[in-house]
Amino acid sequence: MTKRYPVRSAPLWLIIIFMVFTQAGAAAERAASEEGFNGHHFSYGISLCHDQAREDLLVPFRWAGVGVGIPVAWSFVGETWTLGTELRLAVSYLEERYGNGGFIATPEFLFECSGRIWERGPLDFELGAVLRFRINDEELFSWDDAHLYYLASHMIGPEAVLEWDRLNKSILYLRLGLPFIGFVGRPEEKRFVKQELGSVGVYFTEPNRNLEFATLPDYTSFELAIGITRLLRRSALKLEYVLDYERYSEPIPFTRLTNSMMFSHDIRLGRQK
Amino acid sequence: MNPSARISVVISLISILSGCLLDDSFRHRNTYVPEQLEDGWEISSPMAEGMDETLMAEAYELFYDEARYYNALALLVVRNGKLVFETYSRSPEDRECPHHVQSVTKSVSSLVFGIVREAGYFPDLDTTCASILPEKFSGSPDKSGITLRHLLTMRSGIAFDNDDFSVELHIKAPSDPVAYILDKPMYAGPGEKYYYRDCDPHLLSAFVHHVTGQTLEQWAVLHLFPEIGITDYVWLEDPAGSTTGAYGIYLKPRDLARVGQLVLQGGTWHGVEVIPSGWIKDSTAFQTETDLSDYYYGYYWWTVPELGAVTAWGHGGNFIFIVPATNLVIVMVSLPDVDDDTVGTILPEFIPLARLINEACP
Image (cartoon, rainbow over all chains, first blue to last red; front, side, top):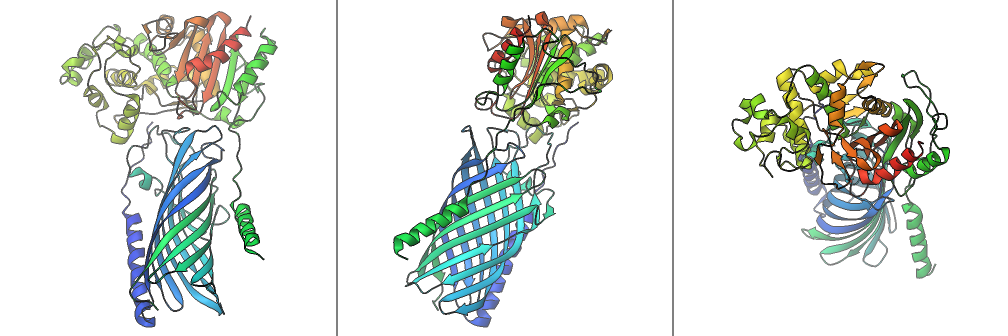
């Protein structure tokens, strides 16, 4: 018997990204016209991380190592609310207890929207939502050179941001995102195809095949960020520590914990406030 | 709070938050005492079958040695036709799970081919493949001299790397895999050189399908598996529907032991000849040298002259190891898709364990 996976293109994935981009832009324009031009921002940066993962579907090892990421973001900051999109591309090299290697590549796209709900002195508290499209592509070649392991998680959830801008030309902030409801893609527990790698497209199509609804307690995730933004004349420098945790328990658990330091340069487009 | 204290607090907070995922071992020590099931296997113990308990205990320790065989899932020992040792290092549930045993498939293909020949097909192994299926070879004059014997001994000369083979067969999915294989260049003339390639047994399987109208799997389902009690299995097929002759069979560990016991018994099971004894003898005898100096090749079976043994050997560390002199069958099942250079177990690495178990048999 042959159970060959039909490899389909994934226009839905691209369409969703495109729609989010266009909707974000339109929302930003509306916000700009209603509240005055407060600021479009473009930022780029680099992140270095310590990455840990367990893919119990294959072996119950902790894979740990370091990785690098490139975040690129656009955001619009209004008087009382903020819209933002961010694309993150990251890859980590991990090793298990015997020193054998593997890679995890993580393309990720986020759409964030938050509004100020509380303000007291130098403190701002914003509450909003984060929509995150993420694929954890695991290439654990030492233990399985024939199959791709992955967790695709396309999730939405609340996000809270606390800012303290009393520091001299610096803003200290703390952000907590809890995307926990959405759709996930995971490999089957038993796969009867010897070799499913071989084309770049498979890293996108396989994780997005047969997406299933997931939420707590099977799926848990949070992203906690602590950062400081140093304001310059027409730009800003940002240093951010991010703790990112993700776990999905079906059919057999995948868990990932990433500690990363991100350094980015934020360019303000248009005139300043 | 002074600046250094603040930094300490931040670092402590980060350390606590970052934590660590728990690590676990791939294998856990489980019992080696087989459980009596209603599956036809008679259960015994090493001592009852005259085996040295101390050496078997050493074999158990060696199998669970953290520095070796660390992708191994199961080890079974059959002595005098009885299951005397059975341990599952990751989970006892692996006993009931068909495992992909990679190139052990080739050895099963060999057994099935013996049945096909007994039915009157392919009587002369020196027949050229081109004479069997001339339409497939019309565009490949350089391959017209390939014989069935060349395919059975990995000497076709077709240059088709194993990794490329599996990728191209399943990703490119050619509608005519035979033509696709025959379109590859030659690394040597037919029969000139041993070169372990998946394309050779796959061609043999495709020829069985074309000539007999039945796939290897269908032959096995009709004439092999039910005879020896195999009911739960998976066997892959290529895009044209031919059984994959080189890999792709999934069998339970105890069923692998049945295959080994069948070969040990010369092809006879409960007094019935399932595989012609002559074919068993020929296919497990020396047919060609290999690229490993201490091991030779029969018809998809490896021979180990040091122990007078014959073995099926699948990537990752999958073995059906048969020692006729001591009436012994050893089965090891391992995670199949590992990198053999780093994780997997190759035959020379398995031999110390097999030798130890064999030494336990007086």
